[in-house]
Image 1 (cartoon, rainbow, N blue to C red):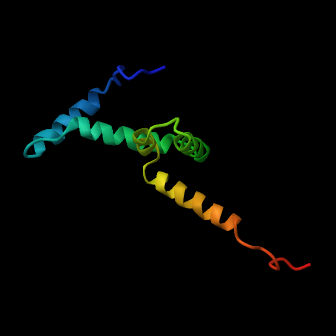
Image 2 (cartoon, one colour; image 1 turned 60 degrees about the horizontal axis):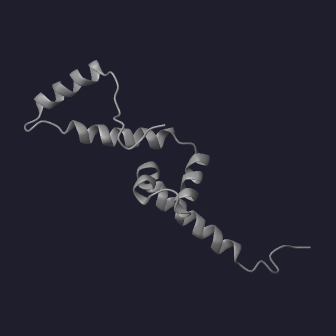
Image 3 (cartoon, rainbow, N blue to C red; image 1 turned 120 degrees about the horizontal axis):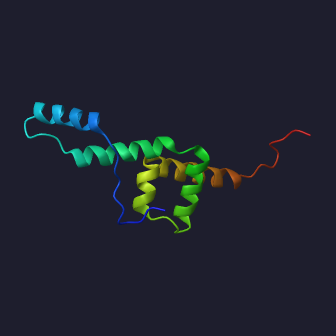
Amino acid sequence: MATNNDKIQFRGEAEKEATQVVDQMRLGGINVSELARQGLREKLREALSDEEKITLHQQYKQGDLSEDVAEILLGDGLAEIEREREAFEEAAELDTTGVFQE
């Protein structure tokens, strides 16, 4: 299991070379660490199934997952899940008397 002190490493010879090419093209270069951070967030979000996203949201609401981690994993989905949950709760409270025909 990964700990907070673990580094994320991979062999990326072609990626390193591509980074150097873009870095040389730009005045002032590029922030490789920020690109890697953004890319990792994007790929983590893409890797999650809808069920996993719901589980993560539940863990967040129960306080088992920090807001920072929830934001990384769910991004805009965090607010979307919350809106859907609120809409569902409001709909569940609606008076349905007389809505159905007998």
